[in-house]
Image (cartoon, rainbow, N blue to C red; front, side):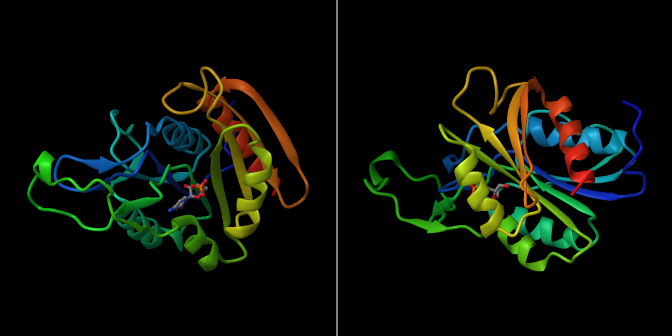
Length: 217
Ligand code: C5P
């Protein structure tokens, strides 16, 4: 579509899977490739927005016209998001943030024999929850919830707990959608009891449907 409804709006998007390194070669991570965040950035750009994309390690080049900030771990992603959040009209947190990190980092590669049987872990900041606390009334904040089985119930809880305006409940246990795929399906939820099912489609189509949904928040 040729919609230019985001003309001049600032859209902040996070993408990809954060990594929490234990040493220079080993990390806690997840299979996110950042394709959903890329699709969101392209859709927003297409609709006229000024787009900032904060991304964890990705295997693609960020297209022209999108301001990119590369980060690795949750703490760096939080810092980049906080630096840009106050100026953003719409923020979409599509990154898959590793929920924990190794309690300690070793500058030297740990020899196999010195790896502990049980790795001590430490929490990482909940980035979108912090954004929710800082949110001003004119700002819109959208989260994602990647789930197996029942996707709606936990997503609705996160919508409330993290003070989001909308959430994308995203199945990751179905064939050909979710992590790494060019396709996706989802349920969009908001506080007005809207619950919209988006059947299997490209991530770019889903991104456009999400901005349509957000325009009616
Ligand atoms: O991991 P969870 O299902 O709680 O993720 C829901 C939302 O919270 C997602 O938008 C995700 O990007 C965000 N999140 C975050 N910081 C974390 C964990 C999740 O911003 N540490």
